Image 1 (cartoon, rainbow, N blue to C red):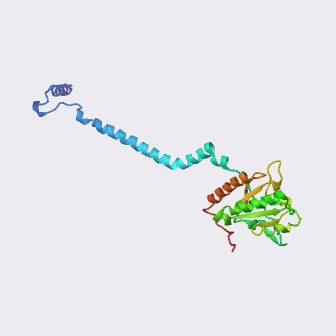
Image 2: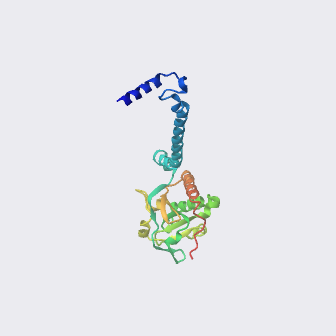
Length: 247
């Protein structure tokens, strides 16, 4: 107990002694034992900066995904700009054999490797059929240097002979005979329309993916051209003119 009292008394004397007495300072916490206020503020600012920097990096990484979702769900520009109707899901070209105009045969899947602009009509080729053939040729020619990436195809769905006067006009066309049943597994008209009322777009992989409206006039043809130009531009990184040569 006496030791305890002596210790307490020493502590009391030390605490009450002036700072310069005996060259010693009183016990206790002093200001210099705490970090400076400025350093604490700087440390907090560095922490906030680090968090903001990390958030910025995350936003940059996520920006493409955010933009794509915003475009698809909010803006959807392509849905408003397309003249042709997109086919969802696209229909693959059937594995059937068509007849050529010279009496030969051709596998329909062999048309893969090129964009196709397709019309369907009977061999007699009435006025509507001839209008479609004219539009197909004009649309292809209007593509300029890109025209070699698009073939125009006339699928004849009956056995009627072709008009002789069309021979010269069809020199750059692919004309094939294919029965209506086989055609029906691939192409289809819009409701309340016939197969021959439309022009159809097929991608280089053989998928029917777009149908232009029936009774297309000059204004519609200009819009169809824009659609074709967009498709060719979008596929320019992987699609080249001409069909790939098979080994």
